[in-house]
Length: 466
Image (cartoon, rainbow, N blue to C red):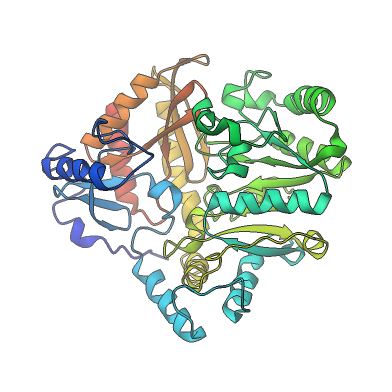
């Protein structure tokens, strides 16, 4: 079924359309004003224009996969708001359906979902769990964003098991609140400012960081060595006893730090260790879930049932913030502690989720994710031959191009130049990486991007890097 495009008024002059080399003068003026009145990543007002923002872009209008800035430049977005807009910006069908759902249930906007029972929440949860393999064994706890969902998962594991320690798999991004931040080891800057506040009960092991792996030269060589020799032989032997560990937390598909799925052997080895020791398994699917990987939920690729998995980003359908920790029923039946979220599961967010799930089914968006993925993969086969492209990788619409001279020589400045040139030519991407390997550009477009726009953006990308 053909997906409607609602960005025609932005396409009149062709896309991308660059009227004034970005950032244009009006954008620059707005950024100067912003530094006087607001904060972004705590960037000081004396910083350069780009500091505090990934790109010096001031937005006037968005529609589907296009962004118009205040200087009338129009960009093709390969970032989808860091995957918060899987269904395109300002999707009119999802918005209208969300309004209709709220009218149907008699509740609009915000409502204290922790204090009263809502039929909308019951029916939304039922729809969500219908998309989960063995969904009947799970329940849904709602929050507002990914870090809140991970806080829920961590607290649930500690409360349920009565154990005080967590083992975190390095390389993943878990969030910026203190519990989530305590579990994060992606780059030192993520934690250095608040190191004194981080939990001392977090232990770290090697994640499925295959392009940066210290054990294998190639992901295809993976036999779970990092699990066997790091997790079992070091962390659970030298640092903490297995019976002290409440949970393992990891991204089965490492997103912003790597854009790389864990090998199947790695996931199954981790599952075996957790099961043998009564340790709960938490999967962070905040960015990789909701269809991004080519399946609805990332763990479907592995045939593994996590005890808890978290989701956010586009979970609210692009209508309002929504996240969830999806927790096995047997855990919830025995959970002694209390945890809540004032705005978690607000009617507007639930309506957005329900509308988005209906939209995905109506337009067979999972099929479309894989069709668009194949278009990108065809380009990747050519790009891998380019001199500075170390890897072009990823599943579904979670992809990245990694620029290195060799495995141990990341080309960070080159990556930054590519990102800037793409921006100047009307294509928006976002950087990423782990540790000293901040050398990749992400390709995570909306599921609804018209094919011709994707092809056009890839043409420009190819021209820049070739």
